[in-house]
Length: 233
Image 1 (tube, rainbow, N blue to C red):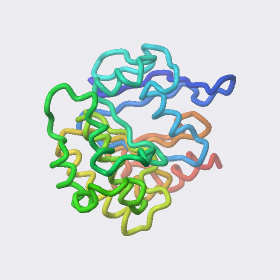
Image 2 (cartoon, one colour; image 1 turned 90 degrees about the horizontal axis):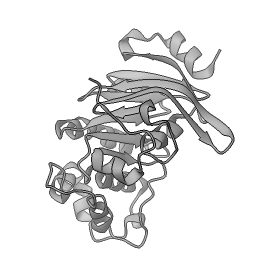
Image 3 (cartoon, rainbow, N blue to C red; image 1 turned 135 degrees about the vertical axis):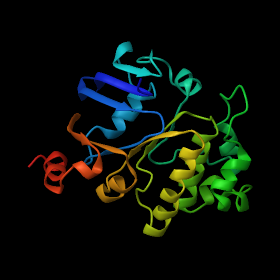
């Protein structure tokens, strides 16, 4: 049984239809990357999974249970967390306070605590009392990921975690992903950088205009097939 599965998932922003029958699966322990150009529907897909957009109950199943249309708060409690595009940190809170917010839904202790997040990103320990938004872009991204991990999710959705960051910072963040998986977390990574996505993913989905145009293991996908799926020509 897949950890997360969508079948015929659709999503709308008012009258605008943004997803058209998306079928997707991720198994426990996998890293799955979603690639595609701007406006392809990648972030919309993550928002639908998190309950931020309306969807039919059976169109999303997590650990065998229908969760389409379930509230975002209940989604988090069931074990799905997101590191959103744009980071969405609380500017009035310190690094440590931002991290602690992520644990609000945690009823029992889990692997991810302040200590384990600081071990994952040692720089955050040094800046733990600083306002989160005073940090560099890369450090803020680490806070965003750490905050999501504090809910001890089984599935972490990462939306454009490398966007706007320097290559050396991207390298450090991606180097943390295997350690996150060791903590019992499966990963869905939305990424515009095709090479980066292919390097870390067990499987890749390509979105174009709200539809899946290609999927498979990176080694099985040719450059030409990816190009056509990504750009449509």
